[in-house]
Image (cartoon, rainbow, N blue to C red; front, side, top):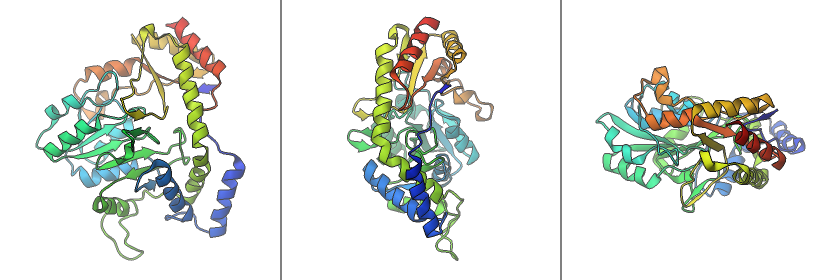
Length: 357
């Protein structure tokens, strides 16, 4: 069985060595030594000045919206994983969708200003499949209209844009460390914030608002990650070069073997050092996609319709029509991509796509 992705498991001995430290310390949660060490190593690896590791990739978005959203309208993309929009609704804000760029698949920055109203408080945009939004244009719009910017960078681990970590853009940036991601802690995520005052609020908000055991800065919830998850992160991080090189090889294989005469793929934004997080292909019609998906499934190869459906069509969002996102969502398929995938399998998948459309 070949799935769209496969969790990277570090050598068991590496993980056992980190777990032994937990037993030695007798400390399982509440920002123990392993979590703090992981944060320091991630800051070095990512070339960022700050990071707050959390228990998943959605909680950081929810905390940021709780603090910056103020129950207002959040301009966002309809082309993302459902967690992006669900977090907006969950935090009693209102998603206002803006359609996407048909090549980069990120929010169309030229359409954002038309969606701004007096109730708008934030722009929440997604770096789709690790492909950066037009961050300069979004920043200029946010400054002009006094809005906050939150980036859902769930897929963007290690991505740089114009020589800087993608996590340094926006008021808040978030990432997922879910088991399906190229760097993972089993289940986990992270939040990045350059402003010291805001970061202080975000930090205490992820730990019930605590200021020591008996005092509270303010309102908070539980976004803490455990030492066991920290141990997994510390075990995976040394293998990032191997992971990225393997994923790059697979992507290059698809680009070599696929017939692009009637296929579109992701256009990576200029000045981006991409991380090969996903490999989407866009068919001319949904019927072609369904034919290819059926042919691959028949031989136990399972790509994923990702992202599908367009989020403006979900009942609880009450979104208006987003023609580009809806069209792309109906025709896009993410192909299997992980470091261990062999060239022979990449060729086989590519050949099946060409003969099944």
